[in-house]
Length: 443
Image (tube, rainbow, N blue to C red; front, side, top):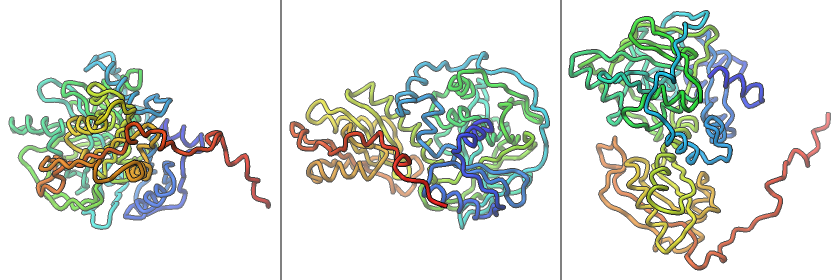
């Protein structure tokens, strides 16, 4: 991560905050206001109560996500599918043993930035940490994100989602009355962050997957107190174990849907050791922000895209708008009813985030919901191009069934009348650089 941060600074693509900020609400407020006007990441050099600077919004740009995986044409889904198709489940060649970095420091959880993001959050949270654990029987490595509430120097409380592989690992260990060793990785190389966000087969070693995204082996160093190895260039590592048969209150917490998740009895992580590289940078992620949802959206969209291109023709690209539980599919229509076929296939391709599926033509920007809804509302009758599928679950964590039901929308041009809906354009507009036309300010 540090190398990438330095690259962005050298390119002038980083907003740097030199004044001291309060980790309780002020830091989060600056992130939120900055993201409202720019997708540039931020580096806070001085955070009250800690010696560590904080970086945020690294993953808040589609262009940067495409750069990270080599999608030079901007088609993240297509490039991600190619990476996944060529991926091997595991190999020792993808990992390399390394010594701990020089100047490795040890300390306490309270030495890290104590960031409280939202008004009603129960306290400081670690939001960007990747949990590294190994399957109890096979030893396959899993990387996953779980919010972590700081309770004290020796304890974190975490929520494990019911569908996560880490939850299955913990259940296996708990059935044996054993704690599950795990390490929190804070500030990892981008390919490790991407591998953690991906939905990969259960038997795929996700550290090996990260190495294959990188195209080079990942140096690994041993932990000090648990039987795990971690990527040697990780900024901060918190070692410990998830306790069996222990659940304690965690929350409330402002989650990605825009609401607070209420207090619940969740898992307990006992902290055994905290270490960081000399000059470590802490990664702080504002939940529900572009940095949170864009990577989630990109990897889920890639999964839906991979399913669609194998089942229906004419699929060009997919965008997921996770906070809205919606998917938009760009197609090249080929027959009457093609858009509905695609929408039905999209519903079946992923059980979550498809509460609404909108299918559009190839001239629509699927990442711009204004453009998507413009297409739907200007290209035909609204009442004849919508389909409601009742009583279908829409999200795995939904005890009140608020997300049940699916909405399918055909926003493509009427078949046989495509010429009537040609979009207006100005020749040469794409080549215009406004800086070439405006004189620099005088004085």
